[in-house]
Image 1 (cartoon, helix red, strand yellow):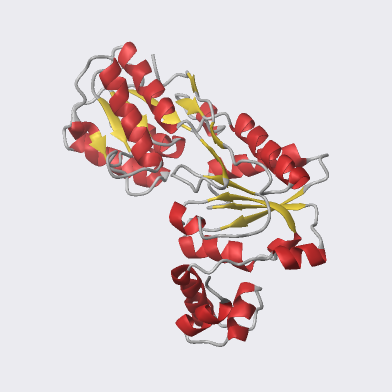
Image 2 (cartoon, one colour; image 1 turned 90 degrees about the vertical axis):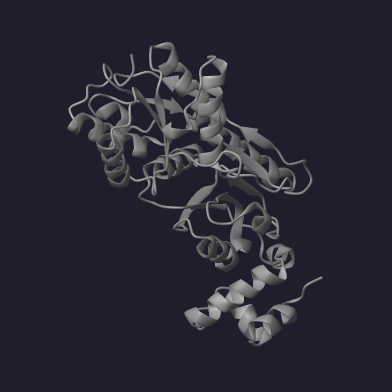
Length: 335
C-alpha cells in the first residue's frame, strides 16, 4: 500500500511537505504543490481521512465542485441544489474547478473535507480511473457524462436518449439532413459528446434513413461565440442541411444566431434543437426547442443519496448509478 513517504520520494520533497500540501497549508509554493499532486496521482496514494474526521466530527456542510460558476447549466444546477438543501439542516459550499483535472484533484485534496458531511463532484477533467483512486471517507455523489467508478454514487443525464429524441422529432417533421453540431467520435468517446452523437445516429437508424457522416460537425468549444463562428463556416462551405441538433443549448444559441444572420428562416428552412433546456432557451427569438434533462429530478436523486449515506454510513449501502429521464420541450425553432 502506498504511503506518504512514497509520495515524498517520488516528488523529491519531505514527508512534511506532502502533509502540508494534502492538508492545504498555504506555505507551499505553487510549483512544489503541483509536483506533489502529480506524485499523488502517479503513485495511487489514497488520502484516508477517516481517523481525522472521526476525531474532529462532521459538520452540516455539503461541498459541490463544478467546472464553472459562469456556465449557465452548472449555475442553474447549483442554484436548484441550494434550494433543495434549504430547511434540511445542510448548507452548501460551491467551488470551481475550471474543468481541469489538476484543479479538480486540488479541490478534493486540499479542501478540509473532514469538515464536510458530503461532496458532490461534477467531474470533467479527471478520468474515471483517476477518480477511482480517491478515498475521501465521506459520502460522494459523482455527476458527469462519462464512465465512473462503480463504488461511487453517480447521477448523469440521459444523453443518448435525449439526442435520439431531438433528432427523431426533426426527422418526423420533414428534416432529412440534420447536422450533429458538436459531434464526437462515438466509437472512441464515451463521454457526453460520444453519447449524444450515438443518439443522432440511432434516430436515423430508427427512421430507416441513411445518416450522412459529413453532417457530423466538430465545435472546438461549447460556447455561443465559437458555435456562431463554426456555423458561419459551415454555411459558407455550401453544406446542405435542414436541421441542427446542437450538443448544448449554449452551442444552439450561437448556431441559431448564425443561421438567422445568413438569411435562412427558422424553422421554415432550418429546424434547431438544443440540449439542457436552459432558461435562456425561452427568451431567445425564435425560442429554442431543447431537451430537458430534468434537473429537478437530478437534484432529488443527489439529495436523497447524500441523505441516505450521511444517515447510514457512506459505505454501508450499495452505490447507485442513475440516468435521469429526458423530455423534448418544443418551442418556435422546430415545426
